[in-house]
Each structure stands twice: as structure tokens, then as C-alpha cells.
Length: 401
Image (cartoon, rainbow, N blue to C red; front, top):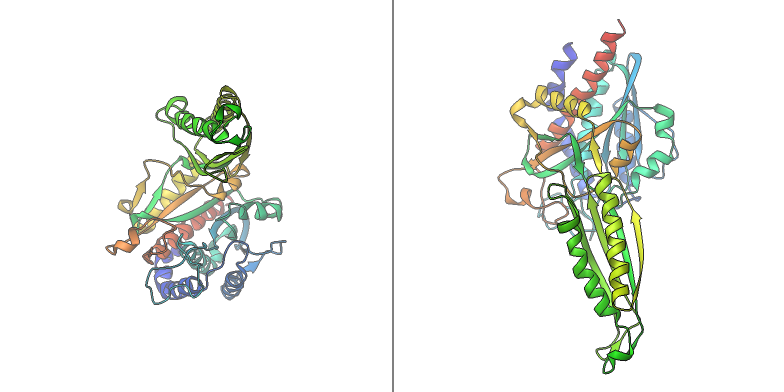
């Protein structure tokens, strides 16, 4: 099909426009569920590319719908749009114009890549048999944007066959794509512990039940959950990031609170972590005469990539970028992604787009205010998205003959 050979050519033709869009978005970042200007820009561009907008009850976020020449299957391509409450220190001429808000996770790159893919696919719609959904999602950073999309009725109305998302990755050079079957990113749960004792005078601890001592004991014992209860080759993280208790040096308080985050990459380990945290917290407090209330909240599940979809992504990226620029990621990330919720409804996968160059600032970690992103990642993401969708819907066309 001639259109297949045109994907890279079209991407290069429109690349400067895509970069200009990325920089506009970068200068005007918007926090989660505040992406109104970004959404308006995305709608404007989709209409310019001949792509209709789905009428769904979304406060922010945009869903473009491209119907091919003939009916067929449906593929969903997703990019997130929200920025972070971080002060930008990149020194770029198009740096954020909003104090304390910037795109240090690369969602501007994601949005530009998907817009470029939409423009490419819109130009070859006559060769497509089926539908492409372009999901520009809000509020990924708060891990609740995907739920708002699900609640809008998108999946019931359009019933996509599978979903694919992408994310910047400063550990890979620009122009490369990273893929991984199975566990890709971790689930994200939160835990809050309230250790209850009996307050009193610091000079008479025997007349009190010290919740600080109990909390310290629990905190130390919690560090054994991963090292002694989780299998050595299974990934898990437990970080207690906040502890608060007491008002004066000579006063034993009544309570101490602790809060933390739990990350796992399998359902079994996720359940095990909750069970062990509850056991250690409650029994540890009881051993010292105190008590402990445990509030364990399950957040987003782990991102588990469907092997068949991953192979489609790998093939599409190799066709457009060369097989030498497609990398198999050795380990999952312990970061989390609310894209995982879509994968509980349909098969799918995520892939990484490299953003590193010789500039040391491109190798800073995500969420760092000084990070820069090599804009060649926009091209790599767009052609992978474009080839993936075109191949999938072309195969459907062949089958219908």
C-alpha cells in the first residue's frame, strides 16, 4: 500500500508544525483537570485535519474520531495532556510562562506526537477500513483522568479492540522506542497508619503508652515486608514518606500518624503487601500496648502489556525507525500510570519514546524542573502510532476482501 511508504515522509513534512505546537503547549502548561486551553488547541487542530470530535461528557480532554473509507475494527491511541506543579528551570526560550507549573513529564511531547499521528492518518483515511480514536486524556498526574474517560462512556460507545499509549523516557536516546511484554509499570496504592497510645508526661513514660516508640517499631518492621516476604525476583516498593506526632519535647502524645505509598507489578504481590502491612502494623502496636488503625487505599492497577499488542508496536516501530532503534526494556518501572484502567477493559500496551541527547539536561529524571526533551521524540512517537494504526486497519481491509 502506497500510503505505508508515505507515513515517514508525511511525518517529516509536518514535523516543524508539530514542534511549534509542542512549544505552544509547553509555554502554557495546565494542571490536572484544568487543561482547557490545551483541549481547545487540540480540538482546533483535529478539525483542521478533518477529524471529528466525539460528543462525550468530559470536563477536559478531547477524543478525536477518524472513520476510514470502510467500516472495520477500532483502535484507540492515547496521549496525556496535564502538567505538574513544578517550577521550570530548563532555560529554554519557550519555557513555561506560568509560575510553578511546567511540563517536566513530557506530556506536551505526547500531545504533539498524537496530533502529528492524527494528521498523518487523516491524510490516508481512504486506505483505512475501520476507526481510529485519538484520546487526549486529562489528569494523568493525579491518576484519575482515565476514570473520567471511562465514566464518559467512551468504551461503551466505540468499543475499541485495543488501546495503545506512549510515554517519554530519558533513559533512551531520541529516535528510539522501548517495548516490554507483561509488567510495564507498577500499581499505586496508599497506606495511612494511626498509632494510638496513651499520652502523658515525658518524665513518667511508665504511666503512658508511647505511640512514638510503637510507630518507630512498626516503621522498622515494615522494611522487612519487601526483603523477607516478597520473592527476590518480584518487584515491590514500600515507602513511608510522612510521619507526624507530638507537640513538645517533654510530652508523650496520644497518637502518631504515618503515610506511605506501595508499588507492585503483580496482583499476587499487591495482595501480599496489603496483608503484611496490616499484620505488622496491628500486631506491632499491640506488642507495645498500643493499637493501630490501618487505612489501605488501592489506586491504579499495574500496567500489564498484552504480548500480541506489543509485537504490533515493535513491528510498526521497526518498519518506521529501523529494528536497531527498537529496544526491549529489561525491567518494569515502579512508577504508575492510570492508562492501566483501560487495560482492565480491553487488551493494549504502552511504549516508551526516547528523549535523551548529548545535552545532559535531557538525561535528568522525569518531574525534574530542569529536564529538557529532545523533540525528535515527537517524530518517533507519531510514526509508531501512525504505522500501528494503518497496519491494523489495513489488515482488516485485506480480511474483508
